[in-house]
Figure 1 (cartoon, rainbow, N blue to C red):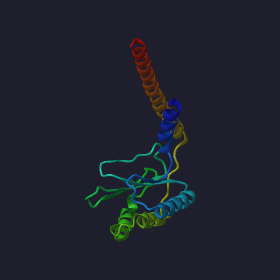
Figure 2: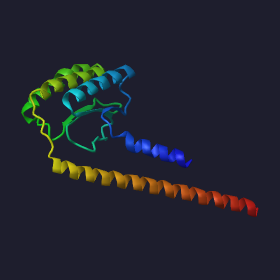
Figure 3: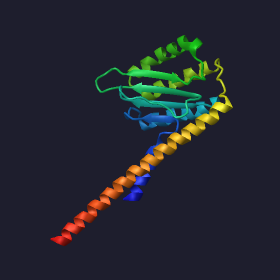
Length: 189
C-alpha cells in the first residue's frame, strides 16, 4: 500500500514538468496526438524552446514552472460551448510587433478548428508561429537570475515533496491506528 501511494505521488509530481500535448479533454485522436507531438518536437529542436498544447475546460488554467522560451496553446472548451483559444508566449519572446500576424494565423486556422480537426488546427498554428519566430529575437536569460530561479524552483519543489510525503505519512499512520483498533476490538469480543 505504501509503495503504491508513493509511486502515484511521484508520477503526479513529475508528470507535469514536460512540454508536449496535454489532452485533458480527450479531443485528439491518437494519430492527431502523435502528429502534434512530432511537430512540437521538431519546433523545440529547431527553436530551442518549449511548446505546450493543452485541451482544458474553460475554468482551468495552465502554467509552467520555468517560463523562459515557452509557447503555450490552450484549447478550452465546455460541452455545449463554442470554446476559446489562448496563445501565450513567455516574456523573453517579444511578439508585440507581430500581434497582427499572430491574429491572422489564428483566424486562418479557425476553419479547421470549426470542423473539429483539433490536431490539424494545432499543427497549422504551430507552423504559422514558426514562420513568425524567424523574425523575432528571443532574449537570452541573465545567468544571475537563472541561478536564483533554480534555487527557488528547488525550494518550491522540495517543499511540495516534503508536504506530499508528510501527508502520506499521516494517512498511513491513521490507517495503521485504525487497523490496530479493529484488531483490539476483535480480540475483546
